[in-house]
Length: 99
Image (cartoon, rainbow, N blue to C red; front, side, top):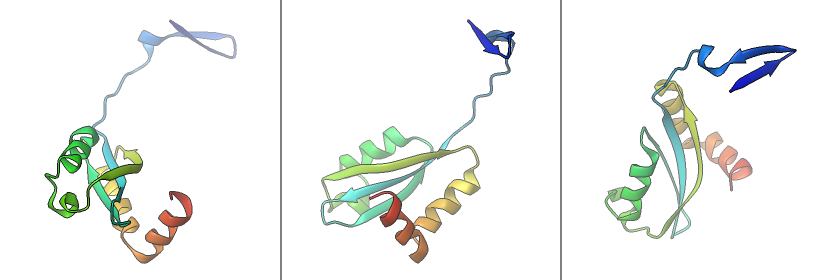
């Protein structure tokens, strides 16, 4: 496989490949109309734990729906964004942009 750029050809094997641990910030809409905001490194596992009622914060609010997620390479930026979504201005941002 080759990549073309301005007439130049690069072999894909020539490009450095970096695998980063990703940090996911996500928003769930709960059955009672509330929104749960969280951060995890394994979104599938965490979402399944929510669905099965294994997360105390959402266990009594089932069913839930994943309405948004984004990935960060930097753990601190992910946790800062989660914290922001829980703030007053973050809630306003979430309501305007994500729901």
